[in-house]
Amino acid sequence: MINRLCEKIKKLNAPVVVGLDPMLSYVPEHVVKRSLSEYGETLAGAADAIWQFNKEIVDSIWDLIPAVKPQVAMYEQFGVEGMKAYQKTVDYCHEKGLLVIGDVKRGDIGSTSAAYAAGHLGKVQVGSCLLSAFNEDFATVNPYLGTDGVKPFVDVCREERKGLFILVKTSNPSSGEFQDRLIDGRPLYEWVGEQVAAWGGTCMGETYSYIGAVVGATYPEMGKELRKLMPKSFILVPGYGAQGGKAEDLVHYFNEDGLGAIVNSSRGIIAAHKKEAYARFGAEHFGEASRQAVVDMIEDIRGALNAQLC
Image (tube, rainbow, N blue to C red; front, side, top):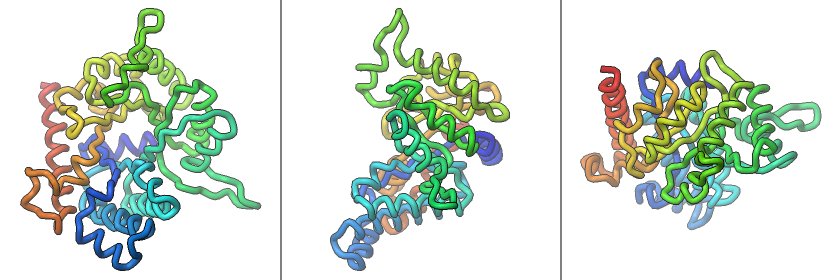
């Protein structure tokens, strides 16, 4: 999948991923009313509103971007019905030719980690059949249980030709409470980055490893150092836009080939209709607002990268 991701980024000239992280408060009132009128004020009604919202956004942006990143928690909060909406979203994005990064942030050990890996990226044995469950193309993984927690995912990625993005330096303000702690004079995130590079060396695509890293846009100097430590690891970059990350700060996350990173925006895209810059579209045309926000984001990142090359 890492080879496909590189190909799609080059074809579209868009190192961008849209986070499908829908809070019900992001969904326009007319969509919510329609779903609740059919299913009542139930978890099924809420999940249907989320699914209808996602579908219109995907229909509006699928041709501009290589990938989407649904955050599973936004679906899990609605229970089984929410997870059905998650599955429908993953399947629909695949129908549209999009790669899917399952933002599941799993982290456990042994058979539990293996089960997570099988459920999200691999296959499970049912009688004489091997069946895929959620079937995302990539998953996010928390590495803080060590190799025991990551190896089952790496094994599945190698078998299925899928990929991981491992948390290294996250974009949230309190990430430094643990990730910046010094060990033998170096911050923990550097040690984790080196380990990601080592895991990735055993699982290579044509140019980049199947094993990538999550490095927040809000810490550009740290991202610059981590790029050097992980030259063959693709970096998933959250924190652009709504969290304060700026395009000009992200140029060092990329390699000289113009690849090596993919920048995420979630509510900045899917809730664009709520922002003053896109208010002209109105809630009735929220998909069009999201499309314009994607166009603007791509132009912003392209401009920063082009300026760096000059």
